[in-house]
Length: 112
Image 1 (tube, one colour):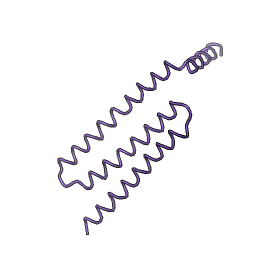
Image 2 (cartoon, rainbow, N blue to C red):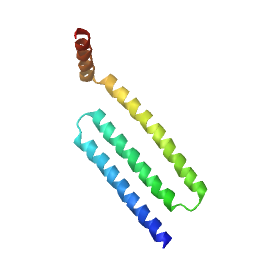
Image 3 (cartoon, one colour):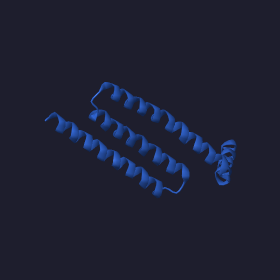
Image 4 (cartoon, rainbow, N blue to C red):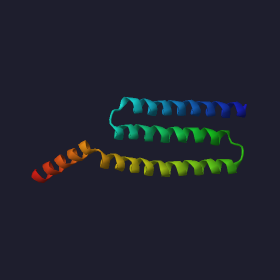
């Protein structure tokens, strides 16, 4: 009986992960600006990875496997924001329209 409960919880978590990944994909197609797309992808991927790894932790038998999976989440959650920040900095530096918008905002701030 306990195996069926573990199977059910694992299935629900995996279905939820697929929904999170689908929402991230929909956000990538829906938003037009690249920074908005990165935000949608980053949030959806973080939640999806957490749900997938949590389902694997529940279905794992040994404590060592659970520890490895927990370390995987820590690694992914620490590298994903760094990568997103790096890509956003590249986008902001390379987009001349965005830079002119920032200059206009700075001028307004100095004036007012």
